[in-house]
Image (cartoon, rainbow, N blue to C red; front, side, top):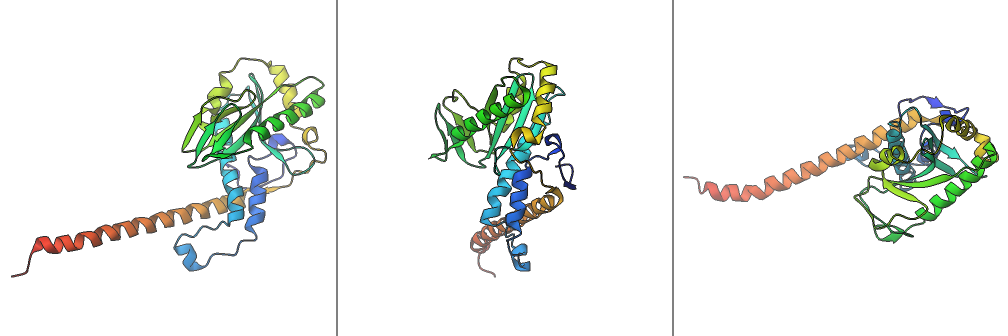
Length: 268
């Protein structure tokens, strides 16, 4: 997030990455009581269990957006695209020479992710990630086809962020699953299917909020407030690590004291 000011997008091309989840995270955070001085000193997280899930989602989307910035000038990227009738959104819509892609970011930090032809497991538990990504792409294809007047094919992608291990036993037939580190290479090495003029026309349609949502409202997103929250979370994590390091050091010193006394022998 380079811009920490409050942003109100007039088109989806101006919409910040993770806008929807940031807004929801900040709404949840208003319900969280302020930490006491002692809690802050010991590194208690400022997040509640409710706001933490939105916070982690935002961090994942921001990481994917950061990587998408590496794409060249022939690519167009839209973030947090509101779609349908309610509050659903598409994390990222990417348009470029190798096609149109919808991206669903999944921040599974430190977890084991296993992918088969029809299943995606997180720490051994089944998820709906594949089904949701496929539905998202089909809906995007319908919306873009209606807006452009031509059939549009959309490839769904699931981008796994910060997993401890990603094991792809078999790629699903209709959804591409990959780690965030693989994303740019996957996009830029695909076959060319869109011309520059087609990319521009597709982007013009995709950037219009009414293409996606029946009653689009793009609320302002307080990026400065999220930056401050992110800093507070980082400071709390650092304090916890310092306390853990101090505790471990104390245990080491305490364990060596009897040995040091024994080795020194009785005083004369």
